[in-house]
Length: 384
Image (cartoon, rainbow, N blue to C red):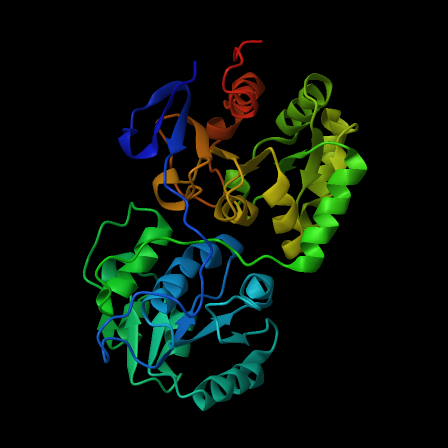
């Protein structure tokens, strides 16, 4: 049995069956620079550094802060420290003036070089949105006069000890994009709003248009991967879903994911998805985002591409189990969450310690198919 309801009205009920929760958050237009509402001089520094190293979804949610700040003060110079994976989301973004890449494997010398590069920018403030010791240390060593992080309850590894200012305590069960705006409020913005839209790239948009034209129909994307094993839907379920969609719909069913998802994709194909188009590991992040803009629907677990799809306004059906959709669910008007509610969920674990991964295994293919049917054609009988 499934039911659709706004996420904020969804109580933490437990029991068998699955529930579908809508996330009815109004979308917002792409950021326009330099237009924006002004705030009194001095309320913000002339420049600041955001430290949010990764992962993809976390960086997407943190962009709400950069967009809000630049809307409030058009001449604000925002720098961003990130790992390589997040670079495609930040490079060329109209709200980001400079991206500082902390390359993995660079050791102490690489870290020192990064610190020197950041110090040379003379940022007025450094904001740690990562909540870890390494990110707090980078903010502390940035040379900024002000260092700001989350309140103690929302940090990890004692990272709050390294920072000079902290946000006021607040509810941690809110969407991470809204929690990012707590920094904007601390810096003087009275009514910041969430804006997550990602910049368009001409070359990638042209590739996506050509890909869709070659298929002769719009795509329905099945994004297979999830960094945390506890967030993954079983390969057999993905395979059965893909097989059913290929035979029952008039869309181009395509599998997506990163290079690391190739072994899992092979399991999915062997489980029934042989007829689906296979793009796993074949698209860059910008190309995937461009394809998501054209998608009739993106079916995904809790992973970075879920957040990019929601950010660009794609219809999203997110399959949740261990993760808490109140915090990490897709943020967008066309986003919905489908999940089961066993007593142990959401646990937030990286891997399931139980003999059987109940929360994801009990999310049936039939329930997902019914939810897909409602997304593709709201007037269609879900049981058809």
